[in-house]
Image 1 (cartoon, rainbow, N blue to C red):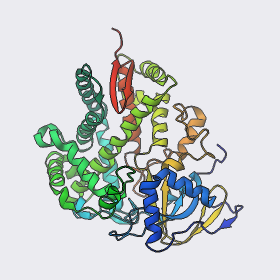
Image 2: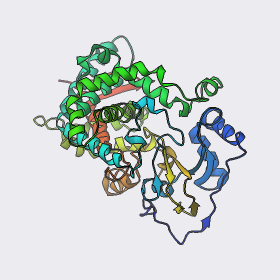
Image 3: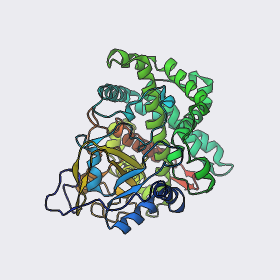
Image 4: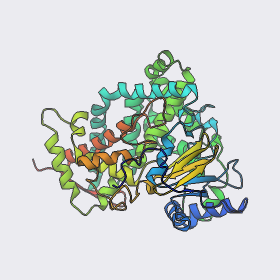
Length: 474
């Protein structure tokens, strides 16, 4: 690591000042060309890498989807693709977050009950702090049931997987989604899916459909082209396609999360509808959606490891978990390697790869080697999988290094782990846009990993499936 002040958005006055390089191209044609390269010909990572090489800069102008023909959105962005420039996205004096969750385009508010939920609010809007504090308080109160709920549901999941392994490989995608849906509903909302047969059976699928219809226009898919560009990326999807799913989920939360919703009304002065729709968004987009990406990424990292990391993880877990105390939030916080494995997964595969923010005023933005003048209203775009491969911050940045975040140097690197719309060393608050559940995400994923190595000596994974599990000898 060569720069101890990379996370600061302050401008280094010794650096040369340059105009932002790159071009948006001709009207309509430029955005369309970039859209096809991003979603089809190159894919996001190659798209951004090629433009870094072309512009000889990690800060440049380009276009990102969605765009022409049927989106009322401006695809022009200033890409910020190193740790130094990307850190400006967290300075709320410089950057506005109003309606920028997925760029200049925003899905219809019909998907969220006709409301702009907290994720679309800027910190300057009064309701942002109300809702953010409601979310943080809800998570804090749930901490007492977090571990017992997780271990009970994981035991059930593993029992079911084991019962099927005799017949061949078992895909982990659906079992994990069912676990995530039940776990987050119970812990965050106090809502038990078992009380609703439809939700218990189909709740996770309803969440998947609701998320997919909102986000598909902006999700890169390089296969099945050009059909994807014609039918999935050319227009926003109407809410009626998932209205039944959302209404079912809303009724479930409304009926089963009465205590949490009531607290939102009495302690945080939210209307019942605002509390319910925001709680459902937290459950669906933030928790269920995020974990549905993170857990498979974690297992994929285990599957591809050639260094014997499973034995090291197992040893640490069993050393830290006493026979009397069992798995706990405290014990998992003492597992440096387990937590580092989770952090490294988040570094290379953040659940939300893109972050956006609009310049609140004219300001000067620093990369490692230059200063650029940003105009008020310009949209900044950071592609986090590249940002967190910054070679001036991370040694051997393209390689998954399980113990990267251990020791003193590893703890310092948490300042540059940006997966949560802020550094891992930061603190969510009503005055910033950092994920309210940042620490719960990392602790829950660490608990998931620790629970697995308490139960098994090793697991064998291939093609998103478990093929074998090795249980300890009695």
